[in-house]
Length: 206
Ligand SMILES: [Ca+2]
Ligand SMILES: [Ca+2]
Ligand SMILES: [Ca+2]
Ligand SMILES: [Ca+2]
Image (tube, rainbow, N blue to C red):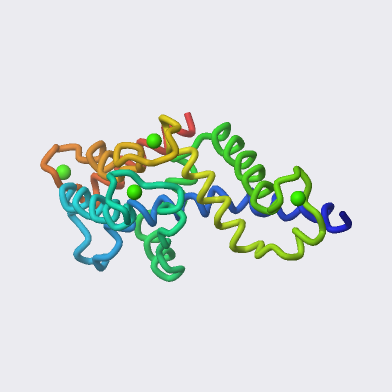
């Protein structure tokens, strides 16, 4: 297996990118719902609006409409475009927020390991426990990495381990918005969001 030695390096790079990309996937499902409005009219964010958009995205992803997202359905969900994601991250600080706030260090390490093992399984297409050079050469590495990332995120989100995501297992930006809604009026202003982010970051540092 001459090409096997190159795998650890590839997965290391992938692992590093995983947290960022997982954040992207989360954003795709959840927070991206709020990114469609232009920055000027984005605030205040209506929590019920976000909830409705999240529900819509869930229903769109649930193509067989059985009330749960299967792994196949999850794999089929397209993330926001790069441009959209860039804007989304800039305006929400969600890239950093999710990467830093969504998963702690131990979780990130666990997910890196899970991601590696998922990628290994995907590359090992005949499932004999080894990646042959022909398996390695035949693989669409980019597509498999994306698939492994999503699978890892899926397994992480599937809290009851039944192989499907219920709406309560999906990341819910409305919960975070509710926590940020200091005056409890159902809307989150720029100031409320900023304050919530500040509180979250200082609790992470402390
Ligand atoms: Ca389904
Ligand atoms: Ca094999
Ligand atoms: Ca589940
Ligand atoms: Ca408010």
